[in-house]
Structures are given as structure tokens and as C-alpha cells.
Amino acid sequence: MAVSITALTSSLSSLSFSSHVAQKPSIVSFPGSKSVSVSHVCGAPTRAPRLVVASVAAAPPTEVVETENLKKYVKSRLPGGFAAQTIIGTGRRKCAIARVVLQEGTGKVIINYRDAKEYLQGNPLWLQYVRVPLVTLGYESGYDVFVKSHGGGLSGQAQAISLGIARALLKVSEDHRRPLRKEGLLTRDARVVERKKPGLKKARKAPQFSKR
Image (tube, rainbow, N blue to C red; front, side):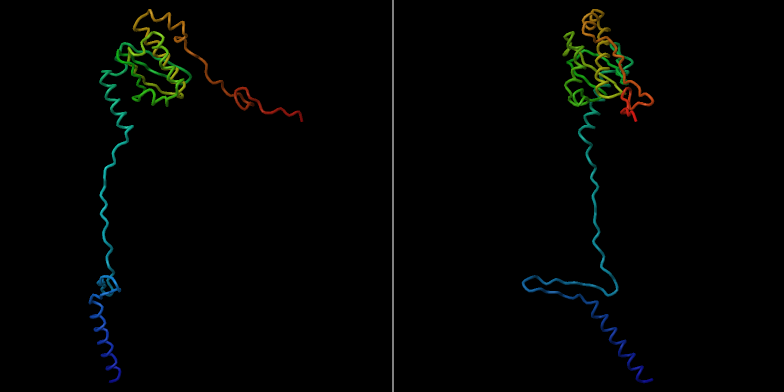
């Protein structure tokens, strides 16, 4: 019994000694470098440093800013909206519908609050569709054109805008009818995609014929 008590006291003393040693910071030195002190408490893990992330508000894209500026510009030029204007025309082509307003200006063309060249992707044919009615009468730099269009593709919308501009120019003067009619700009193009037929692959394309 005495031996067991002696062994117990010696083990307790060694434990207390080891805890004192562990609490002291240890110094680690490397040859040719500064000494680094490493402190580690037994049983308590070191905390990782907190990362502070500063949230920076991202600036809106340039396209969004330009669109907002054009919206303000159009609203300032068209008080009361499109329906309240006097020189207005509606054009249609395939599934596209375009409402066009003309105002005296310098020849700007704005489609759905975007510049015409940007909206029509710089396609020269589509831009020509839009300009032809004004060029025919010599008004390419005499009127600003404001357009709201939807439906169909860009090609159909460009041709619908052309018809809408031609119809709006008739409200400027009835004398414009003859030159516009001569160029075929007042004719509504009624061609649309032909429907698919049952038993055929498309409107007229048939599957390959096999005799046997």
C-alpha cells in the first residue's frame, strides 16, 4: 500500500511539472535567422485570424447606364408617351410590330431606348430598311425617329419600322404619298412562313420516296 501511494505522488508531481513547462512559450531558433517564439497552451487550440471582407458595390455596366440615359432622353422628347404624339405610324411585317414617332431633329434613330446601329447589330441591310423612307424624301437629317418594336426577329422588325416611318411621313404631308408609293414603301408585305403539312417534314419538303 505504501508503494502504491509513493508511485501516485510521484506521477502527480510529474504531471504538474509538465503542465508548467507547457504553459511557457518555447523559442525556436534557426541558424542565420531571427528567433521565433511559439506559444501553445496544452489542450487549447490556437485561433485562426479572422478575415475581414469589405463589400464593394459593383458599378453598373456601361450599357445599362446608356439605356437609362436614352430612356430619360426619349421621355423628355415625347411628353405623354407615344400615343400622345401627332406624327405617328404603325408598321407590321411577319410577326413584328413597330410603332414609330417622328419629330423634327437631326436624324437620330432610337429603337426600344437603344441606338439603331446597336439594336440592329450594325447590319447594313437592316439599317438601310430603316433609312430608305427618309432618304427617299430627303429627310435623313431632318427628323428624329423614336420606335417601339416587338415580336419576330430583327429583320422583320427593321422592315416593320420602314413601313411605320413611311406611314408617319404621310401625316407630315399628303404630297409624300406619290414618291413613297413609287418606291413601294407603303405596301404591306403580307408574306409569312407557310405552315407545316401533316406527312411532310416542312411546308413542302417530303421524306425520301421508296418504292419498296
